[in-house]
Image 1 (tube, rainbow over the protein chains, first blue to last red):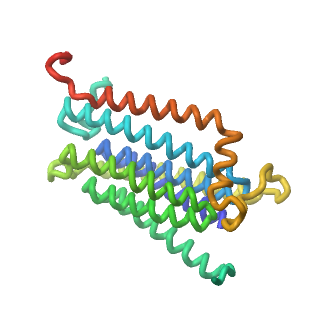
Image 2: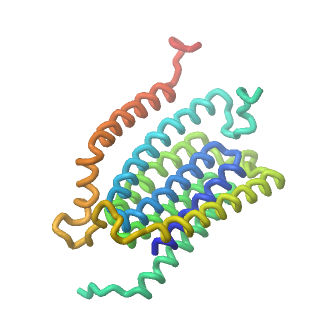
Length: 97
Length: 188
């Protein structure tokens, strides 16, 4: 099942990338990033069946970083929403030049 | 209890959960409402938890449900509802035809690249005797399902584990500082 797991991981990662490229809502963009992290976790777990449990340890670290990223990122989104009353990325173009 | 391994049964459920995960992910990307998208993403995470259990990573499957589907996605849904998104003028956030085609091309390119990499490197490069560590023992071993994960976590990766606590502390402080309501006393 290793090849199938890696293929599924690749498909989910690609769907996450396409979501990041096609959506404008900042929160949905964050959720697409979470989907990509999940896809990478799946390949870690699939390879840990072959190479030992270190892959599962990495998954725990990835989940920790994802939780921290979600907390800080959503706090930033709330702060932006408080200033601009929007989470659409096309309307948040202060640094665009 | 019958503990024999049924390859057909295993394969059927593996493909079942895999296909549900892909379908849910596609629905997640294409839903307009953020709440519906978040619920489909939770469905993906549950399917991935089932796959983790089938890949002999029961503990990872459990914390996938508890931490990802149970905690992180609740925070996402909480923010969606706190900001009162989902109004009709907020819903049209999917980009137009040009960016959609570009995203599809980029997605196909990445998918082809990853597939070629996965097919050419991982199964072909694997030598049965080359594994540096023992594979994960079956679940009915002496330490249960947590010992194979806890051993490397608290021995080889202890420093990274401790640094993770600093990361979490920094994230907590950062979230509080960023999300703090600025009163009239410290308003800029």
